[in-house]
Image 1 (tube, rainbow, N blue to C red):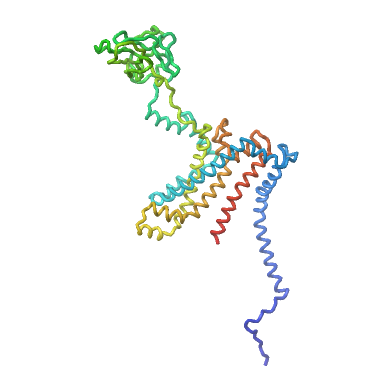
Image 2: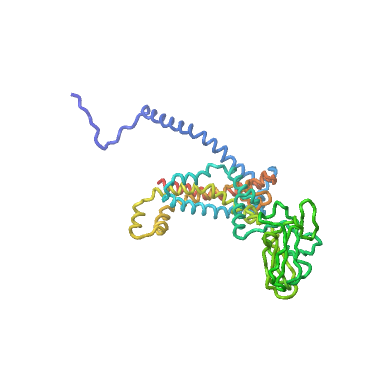
Length: 457
């Protein structure tokens, strides 16, 4: 009988022969080849679109504008001594501090509030829709919205409407006195009678021109001096009228039947340079001063009667152009911030929030002491992602900022383009700016990658 030898438990397995090991090696080799075949196109694109341009820009930054003479670090020295570049660095710093902070705060508030809205999905869709608009289209939209002419720019149309409703507006910005008709223009734009008049004497006629008949207020009536009320020596009467008769008839300096009064005009009685009394003209242009002390007065039409209309805010002027462009950026990216933070908010443990409420915490305390600390990792990722994004902003700045204030709004990305291709034609300095921008972006990218890896572990 043949005996069978059983292997002792725990004993080492016999080594694989060369013939058994070869199929495993071949299988592993095939898997590597397949993996490389799938990765190779991405590596080629990455090398062609990222690695090569980066290396080329680093090398190009050490050459002169023509790329023929090696200049070492001169481009970097010039970069930090050029006022335009320093302004771009300052504006980029403003963007990095302001835009991500506002977007993260707005996204957090909207994400919390949306949870309490009945139509939350529709609300999120409306806020996220600007993300579907290209930066070029968004820049054109806001360039028109920020237009200074109230007839074109919607923001200034709203501002002018509110201003005129609160403070009113002049009805006669184009009106002026006719030369040689007894009215003297002051340095502030007011008109004063050359002759002095006394209460109870003749009526004062103040004729103006420069107002088109179609621009007259609807309530305007034919000009007529105010009728006396029997106050005698304490009453001063007059009329402010349009000294123009349609068809060219009539006599200059005299109130004719076909001439219109100018209503809602402020008139002042002045003595020794001080306004003693004030009146407003009626529909026929008439005005009346009562209870004046005896003496002589001049009659003045204050400058506010002829003030030019309020034109609104110069949104794209040197002072406000950067905040205006940041406003357009907020419009585009608020939905992105809200959706990411809302996703993190939906994953919070609800029992923790309910326990805090049952312990007597109000909604503000729950938000400040529980919701925000639990959302801190998400808020950090959103903030750092937006920092990376604003460092590269180009389209909005280039499109929205008009040519005269382009330098006041420039950031590093636009300055790099302007220096290289927008008239400067110095690609050595432009490459140095590109390297600076890369060095500023890399720390934020590394931070984001590390946080992502920690969250996956």
